Image (tube, rainbow, N blue to C red; front, side, top):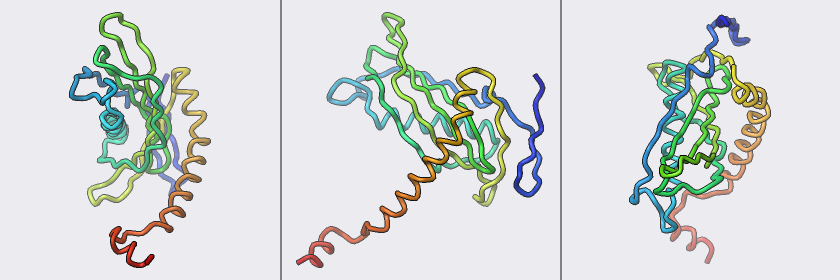
Length: 190
């Protein structure tokens, strides 16, 4: 299967498409007692840090550029991860815009004593490629090859629409918020 040259419909740019698998990153780590919460499971924040780390590596590998996380759609915690488990994160670029990349991260917990594996979390992040002046730059499109990659790629436009709507809601919500100190707020109310 040869690579395709893809013409961006922005300013007549032409870039060679890359396979999803070319951006694949796999990270595996022990779950140690300091990484757990009072329930004895992996801290959500620790896992979110791992997720952002592998997503940025996939986006950098795809674009060969510095990247910045523009959004994290969601992190769905599906099953707890315990100190009996190793946590494995697999990430890859599933779709691209002109300068943005949608990265899928799959979190697998593997019981080190039984070998049982389970999907523990999933997440989609959007990262943007930047040039030397921190300005967004075009990125290559992706070509899915596996069933999983193809399904995620096909559903990308729906996720992009939902992301756009959530961003508009967030901007509207932010307009109601204050940056005043709490004590300043209470003075105005009395």
